[in-house]
Image (cartoon, rainbow, N blue to C red):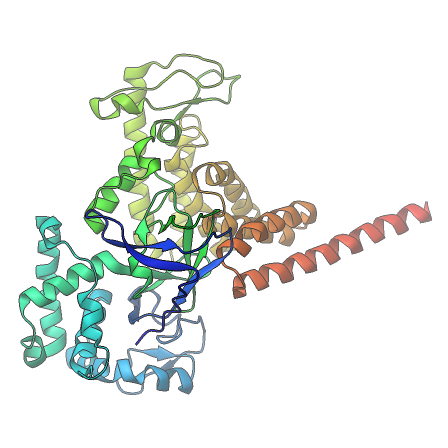
Length: 484
C-alpha cells in the first residue's frame, strides 16, 4: 500500500461541489516552495517507450540494467531493485512469458497489476479495493471513442490475463477500472519532465485541476512531490494542472474534456482572449516593427481574422491572413506528429531537418510568441542536444524563453528546467556570465517547484562551479593588466 504523508496541519479533504467532487484545501497559509505532501504510488508501471533505459522498479536511468532471468522483459538496476519489485512482478512475469513475443501495453499492465492487488488484498486489512472504489469516474461522460478504446483494451487484457483470471471480473468492473485510471492516473516524469511511466496515487488524485494552479507535481523516481507555487490562504483549494499550459484555452478545454470528461471553468479559461490572441499571433507585416497581430478570438470559430498590430497599429489583411495562418498551423501540427514518430527511432537528423524546414516557413509569418512556433523550436533544440550541436541548441532554446515566461505561471518547472538547459549550454560554450545568470534564474524557480530534489542539488553544484570559473577568469584578466 502506498504511503501518503497526509498532514492535517497543511491540508484537508473537502467536498468541492457536485461538478468537481472531493478536493484538497489549505489548513494554513502557504508560501511558494512549501511542501504540501509526498506520496508513493498505489500501483505503477514503466512505459514501454523507455524500457531498457530505466529500471522497472525505481525508474533510475542506467546503461547497465539487468534483465529478469525468466521473462527477459523487466530490467533492474541491481538485485535489490529486482527483489523489491518481485511482489508486483511475480504474476506479471508468468503472464508476460505466456504471450511472448507479444508485449503488453502500459495500460494493460497497469490494469493487470490492479486486478492482482485486488485479488491478493486481505479482507481484514484496509482493502486495496476500497481505495480504488473511492476514485472518481463518471461513466455517463465517456463518449463513443473512449468506449471503443476500452473494447480494444478488453481484448488485450483478456489475452494477457488468460481466460481464467479474466473471467473473475465483469465487464462493468473492468470498465470502471479503465475509467478510473483514465481520470486519476499521473504520468511519472523524469527531472526534465519527460514521461517515464504511469501511476495512481491515493491522496494526490484528489487534487483538482486549474489552468492557473497554485501547486505543482514533480517526481523523484516514483515518489510524487507536491509543492505550493503561489501564496495560498487558509481555506483556499489546492490545485495542479492536468494539461499542457503552453497552448490556447480552446485546446486545453478539448484535451481536458477528452481525457478527463469535464469542462474547465477556471479563471484563465473564463477570460482567455488576450493570451490566446498572442498564442495564435502573426508577425506584423511592417518590416520596421516587431509587434504581433493577435488572433481575434471573439471571431475565431466563425473564421475571424486578426486584430491590428499591438505595436504600430497596422491593420491585418484578414481574409488572406486567416487562410495562410490556418495552413501554417496545420503544417506545424503535422510536423509535430511526424517528429513524434521519428523520436521513437532516435532519428534526430531527420527531426532537425523537418523542424528547420517548418521554422523557415514560419519565420516571416508567425510571431515569436506563437505557440506553434515554440513547439517546433523545442523539438529542434532537443534534436540538437542529442546530436551535440551545442551552438544551435542554444540558439533554438533562447528563442523559446519569452513565450515560456509569458504563458507559464510563475514558478513553473518547465520554465526552470528550460533555463537550466540553456544555462548548461551557455557554460559549456564559455558564455559564463550569461550561463551564470540563467542558472540563477533556474534555481529561483526550481527551489520552489522541486524543494530539496537531486535536480536542485545538481543545479546548485553547477552554480558553484560556474562562479569559481568566473572568479578564475577575472583573476586572469587582473593578472594580465598588471603585466601591461
